[in-house]
Length: 482
Image (cartoon, rainbow, N blue to C red; front, top):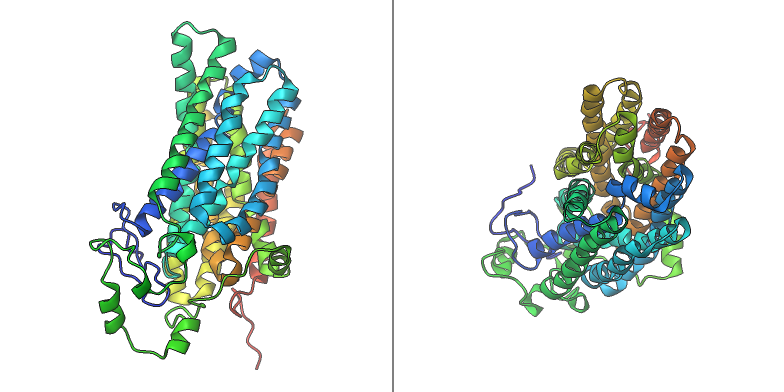
């Protein structure tokens, strides 16, 4: 199983990537990048979804209609699609650290300015620009892909993605408390929510600057040094990794030409030149049917997560006539499940990869996405009582998020030469799904339980596309011809 507490970190002598994880370390370059990737994404979520937990207060103050609330939710997700597609190739060119920092700092501006909205059109416009911060998912996943080898990359991606997504749950806890605290100081309802929005904006600025100043892009340090040999760089902490030269000497000797092209343990290209990002990069990625399928898969996992994050607190507030604080606490359960749910999708993907190769990853993914659809349908029938609704909410949130982890356990194997572009496209597929499913919730705004039934049916249908995928020449089910 994946080593989560390895010390020192074993390093692959060919790829220079870490073969294990130590979540209690903050050493450079590997674990420092690991922790900044999830912390940055979590902080981005606090800005991106800060409005959702206090939407009832905003709706009342700005006299928004149900349709206008739905439009604002759609807008905040729609804009992220554009930015995610652009950000992937930018990561390939400039490295994840600078792109992550830029997104947080730039995204903090519309988050902080959202309190200036006085009507629906201004509010919706600001939510459009807040959407830029949702693109932080791409450098988050790209970063750990650069730092960790194929044997643990699924777990690393799932951990940072899941802990980052947990920001939605954290926001559902924090923002109602912040709002109540401001109101208790005698501030009017008109001004309280506006002041509250300064908190996530400030967090984005602080973490963005910290990310830029205190982390590395890749094992060699700065992105400009990527591809240098171990002997050419001294960026390792002595107590953080095995001595690279001694490990190299103890490793099985192979010809350099073979070592440079194939990772003997995983049969995945180990040191493949990354193509410069161009329009052709996107076209090359889109010509691969696996990329298209993964975009659908991510639409039915992360896309569902985005759509539910936007409505779940307000739904419990309305459906069960709860207080804003209690509805927020229940809504937070959905996001807080990311503490371990997405990670288990990555762990299981890595574990079965070691047992059965890429077919193991495909099997885990199919199980996760299929059960995701099943429990979304069950949730529709559980809404007759609060307690049972909460239980099923927790179960379907687990499979929704674990499915996100299993998707990005597959992504690095589709085409290692354009991982950034593929990550961007698959990530954008998640946002397209979020946009579509948020539209479903808007269409069923007067019958929200029916929307969950629709989401479940679509997800079950998409899960069957797993059998069409062919990675490294292997399918989940292979028909042997005599």
